[in-house]
Length: 388
Image: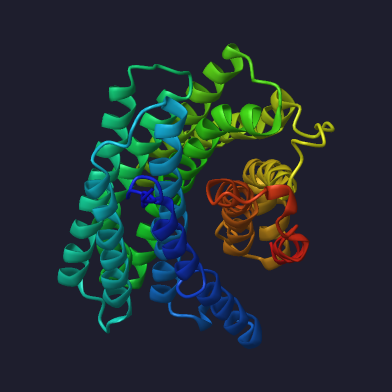
């Protein structure tokens, strides 16, 4: 009997995961580590060109995080929905488009001066990839005819991803071609935090929280969160992100700092979500021996980092006014160091840890390997936590 070769839809996650690994080992963590090493050796945050920081951050979000989420979604959502992936070849085309867009945007950042024309080309290619991803996902969900509680999380995450892709060239112009240092500082202070919130909280965190509702109870025998909590999770997180973005931009552009207080109140919702969510799953209770595998420790650690990251976010104004300004004598109540630490607690501690945990379970399972007999990944776990 002739053995059937797997279709594109059967293994579509593999090239996306490989692209994510390649990104993290080049423009992602490796480049970020070089930047941090340079800053540390020279003891100066300005030792690294800001264009390098922007290129690194973009590659991590659209590349590493984007590739893994896209690959996992293409593979897992049809399985969850008991349906086929809609137009697999079209779905696969989003991979080379995204790769080309990220590479071209990196070059656009590194040129002197940065190239807006090349950025427009790069961002258009990436937007096309995102539109394809969103379209395939929406059609796949719809054709299943099966409505589930996590669907709206997927739709919301797709919408945030699309917003981030549309805003990408605007952010490039604001940050790379501001004209004067004063205008650059205003642009960064006003738009950097909202844009990163759309990318990281809107796309990545909302997608992770939604997929977790379906994955964690089935993969590890954990308790399913209540429908009331799932509803609060959806409206609370998305409302907090949307409110935070609107209030922050309005407060910075109008000079009404009371609006920034509303943005801070919105961040408290994220802390509540981070604290309560693992207890909804009973995540830290002992699981059955046949359910325990190498990925669970990453997922548990990720939720600890999520709590720490959101606690740092809530603590930010207290730190800025109560610690940073008195110690440094600064007249500007904002510590780039502290906020950068929060960002890395969120991106590496929560998002990357969840990606490593879920992929370390999914890849062996899809490849026909008993995950309980696979490498335990303890060195990776220890190093990733220590590094974060």
